[in-house]
Image (cartoon, rainbow, N blue to C red; front, side):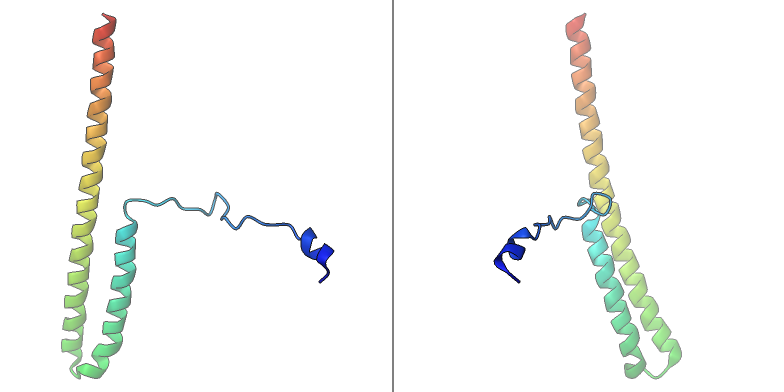
Length: 107
């Protein structure tokens, strides 16, 4: 490659197109925990066959693990959604108060 051709290579912006970009959201932590839970349950599935011989006990262990993970994700999701709802209501109350003050000031 010559010096001239190296300079003529256009510099590209490595950002994703707007259609593919995902802005961070309040549920991203839960998504990460879901991925981790799937990984852990898959590892448990692979390991339970070699640790336990009885099929029914294997199913019980997997069922208990899945129940614990499901309960954890439900609790976390409800907490995050409650915080979002509380924030939304407080914002709405602020807007309502400002509108009320404007109406009272105009009368």
